[in-house]
Length: 80
Image (cartoon, rainbow, N blue to C red; front, side, top):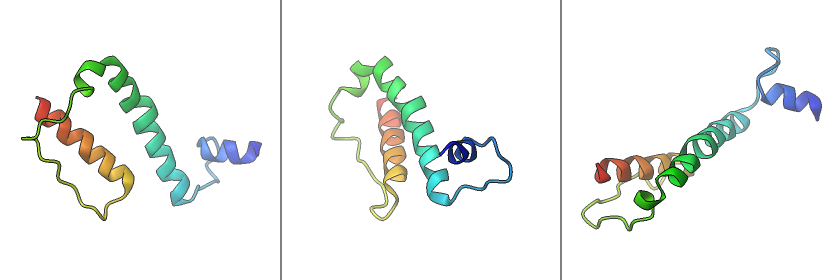
């Protein structure tokens, strides 16, 4: 387990985690380190209902992570 943690945390250059591990790292970084703190800081803004004039458009075949990023990005642009 310790070797796996070293590998996934990037401490070992000999280790190349598979795409699933790399994708999870990106999701964790975006959601846990960027999105959640932002929502907490600006809860009044993010707590509002989406303006019906702000149409949400995304590819239904895209990954859940891609749809999440697209949704948040479009909401932020609409609010601005």
